[in-house]
Image 1: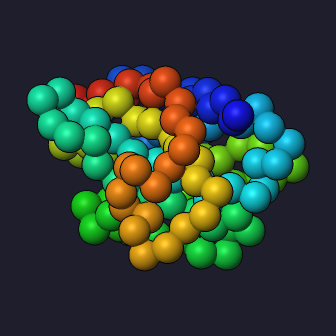
Image 2: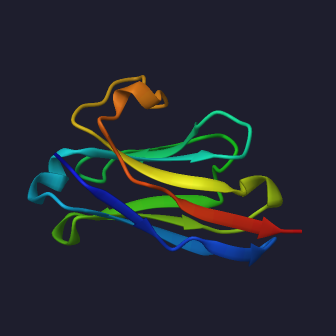
Length: 125
């Protein structure tokens, strides 16, 4: 069992930045691929980014590519999402998730076994 706790959300003006953190409870954190997803009101949960267990591979949704950066610190059991140049359409609840293995289907929610409770990000225009 892996418990995930997100933090760092808040209210920011368009063009601003936020850094989300996701702390994991388990010492085997480094064996998990870690992803970020988001869900806006009335919409389905969508993929944002994922990072491999070593941090050597990262993938991003086209909508955030060039603005968001995912990283991880395995010594701290924490994954981060640095969000720059935020837009009102980035407003959503952001979730981190953990997957023990990863293939080409990293954008699918069903691949991830563990989820955090989410943190709200609101971008005002």
